[in-house]
Length: 603
Image 1 (cartoon, rainbow, N blue to C red):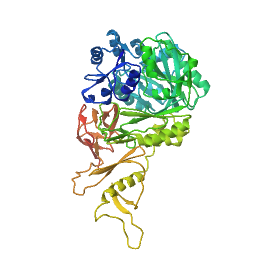
Image 2 (spheres, rainbow, N blue to C red):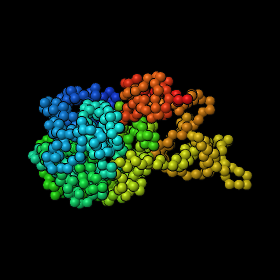
Image 3 (cartoon, rainbow, N blue to C red):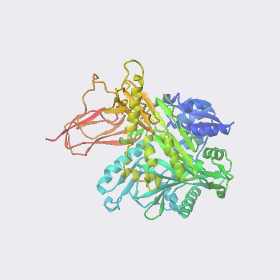
Image 4 (cartoon, one colour):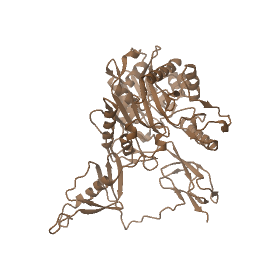
């Protein structure tokens, strides 16, 4: 029996285990102390504790201890770290992925550019780091040479912005990838992100499994992904998929990988961006629409078979498309309040089911979500015979997704998927950076909350039953948050999750979470922060403090920078004035609402 250690956590660990168990493999989970009771640990045949998912030595030792001959890295963590692949090889363990040498070549965007050029694949025009910034044709994109996932990227529109953008990108790249090397490239104002799923075996065969469109993204972080790409022509599809295969062949690529391209809407030209030498988060949409000789594809199964040395045994003509699939990434973030990361205990979790719906997740009631790991909680995938059926199913499925106890982006995803722009496939890679998605109206949610508050009164002689002499029954008036809401007699409300507590009513309606305070007039609410007080908008780490008490600052000047879940936030002076208080130092862990700076306005 083959033994597979999954060097990851959460939904991807469970996803890999499902296929491995179906194939008769023994599975081994990793976990930190924080994850000791997590779903992926319970699902595995064996679990081994490690101090960190990023500890190469500990992960290799865990594989040896468990007798694992294979390690699947999932995505994130060590999945694209060449030293990890090299350490496994030296220990006689097979990585379910490419070799360390291929990771070295393709894992860095600068080296990958050179390989792409050698393979005849078009690349984005670039600038040398020591070129005169005044000579650049702005806008440009500063990005990390190592890693991916949108980390270490900044769009720069003027030469004056370049120094700060380079410093921030380098800092983020060093934190995320341990490498602060940067590239500067032309920034395409309106483009579509098209990526190709490739798979190679150890016998020299490389195939593509068609493309995905991941244009709906925010700050280079993917939000909605779909397959196939809805806007490209057959000729473009042939050119892009052929370029991806040529690039993979250039480096004798084995196992699953993704070649990413940027399609310029203005010219129709496409450029190579990078290659991800691992399985992608969005791989389910490819699995749902690709067929091999008419049978559905399991990319993880193909990965495992390739890792054991089997030939793919597939010809490119055997791979076909059927239907359309769209994936939405559910994150622990408040999308209608600056996309701030969220933490808390999931008190209630409800995932949608039904025809054409797939949910990959590892979140269950009672589970604590912290800022220690990536904020993605789940992926909701909808499949249809065509794009519109898939889109409608996704909108409906997101409306039935319920997570209480902490805020997620599900309501945002639902509004976005229901929008005319997404329906018409006009969203480009920068659309979410230029447009605000409107928050859903909370009127129905308030009525749900009010109805729940009325319900406990329905017993006893002093109930408010709305009776009037010689008149229609009167509505019951209830305070919900700061509003008065009238609940008509016998009111029927929309389906929603409701939790009534002594101090609040929590409602999850159409995917969006609402918390309405039940104000206690006798409670000590404490002083409110003034306009010059900057508090921590999320729990996290202070990366930099740029000012000291007594320092004069200009309006908009960056006073400090903090980070949570690898997201940086600059704290800027709300007006010109003098810093009268600095509440934290670089490296401090701060709680939500902690007072970090106080600025007194100039007289």
